[in-house]
Each structure stands twice: as structure tokens, then as C-alpha cells.
Amino acid sequence: MKILALILARGGSKRLPNKNILLLGEKPLINWTIDAAKFISEICDIMVSTDSNQIKEVAKEAGAFVPWLRPDKLSSDESSTADAAIHALNWYETNHGKVDGLLLLQTTSPFRTSTSIKEGIELYSKFKSNTVIGVSPTHEHPDWTFKIKQGAMTPLFDKNGLNMRSQDLEPAFIVNGSFYLISPHNLRKNKSWFIEPLTPLIINSKIESIDIDTAEDLHYAEYCLNVEKTISKI
Image 1: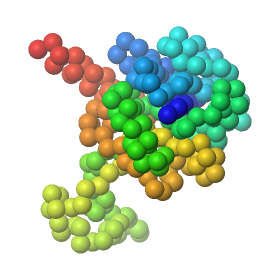
Image 2 (image 1 turned 45 degrees about the vertical axis):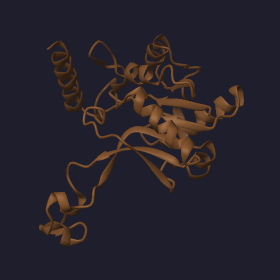
Image 3 (image 1 turned 30 degrees about the horizontal axis):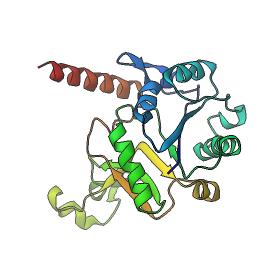
Image 4 (image 1 turned 90 degrees about the vertical axis):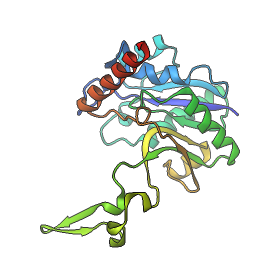
């Protein structure tokens, strides 16, 4: 099994400027993801696609493969993740040979572990290259959600769920952004990771499922990191 790990790290981020290289603990955010993907035998390269020279240098120093800067047309707010991923995949396979899967690892999931990455790759191999997506149990069950129109609330789904105890509801999961593994063929054909059949990589750890998109998310990640350090000293 030959897997290309890909990190898409655009320089522009409106909600959290310079997000990909902001410090979390004692290292840049992108380094957490690079470090988690190292030393996994199925991963042939950890490739970073970025339009930023600063991110490129940080990623290279951390041990990632950064052969070029991403073209401007694939780096705007309107550019799709799939198009940027296919651009990187096409270049890699042209220059370094075919791969069995493309693994997208977002920098916004810094506490994703090497163990989870290995488990996801095992699922991909076991289920004959179905797309594997990282998911976590939802904290707010969809059967207890509403839509509001003209000031009135109505259930988003079957209203019977509103009368059920939480422990009686069918377990529900949400994509946590930490792991997307797909075959090159499916990505090129569909330009999406959400191609059925989907195989879930279930991550139950709330810490591992943290997804950083705002300053508040980053502060919470710092808090969790400090709590773990404190616990380890006890």
C-alpha cells in the first residue's frame, strides 16, 4: 500500500490569520500534523501544497516535502479543496509514480494521532479502497434540532425524536476534519471525498477531534494541551 499524505496549507485565512503556522504549545500548527504522519510505513511522502513561502519553509524544516508553491488560481477563497488536491496528486504521480490512495490531513486537527492514521489506512485496505472519513459522535443530536422560518420553530427531522431520551436515540456522527483517504480514481472522477460507500474512522476522543478554525478554537486547544501537561506531571 502506497499512500500519499497531503496537507493543503493556504497562506490566507480571514478568520484566523496565519493559522497554519501559529504556535500551539511550542511548535507551529502545521508541525503537529506533519509529526503525526511521520514513520508510518504506508505513507510514501508527506506533501504540503501551499502558496506561502513562509509556510513552505516551516513545513520543509519539519520534514515535509514541498516541491513548489501552489498556483494563485488554486489559492483563492473560491478555489476548491478537491481541485488543489488533484493538482498536487497529478504532479506527484507524474514525477514519483502512482499511489494507491490520497490521504488529506488538515492542519486544523493538531491532536490527531499516528495511531488513528494507521487505523484509517487499515480500514482503507480492508474495505478495498472505499473512502475513509474521520468522524466523531455528535454532541447535539440532529433529532433534537430545529429550523426557524418567519419566527416559528419546526423540527429539522422527524418530530418523534424530540420525545425520546438521549440514550434511546440512534447514535449520530459528524465529520471532524481529521482524516480523508480516497482513491486517486474516485477523487479525479467525482472531485469530492464524500463518495459512497463511505467507511467511518470513528474517533471518540474529544481532544483528538478538536478542529481549529477560530481564535477561540486555538485557545481551547492550548487549554487542553496545558491540562494534559499538568495531568502528566501528577
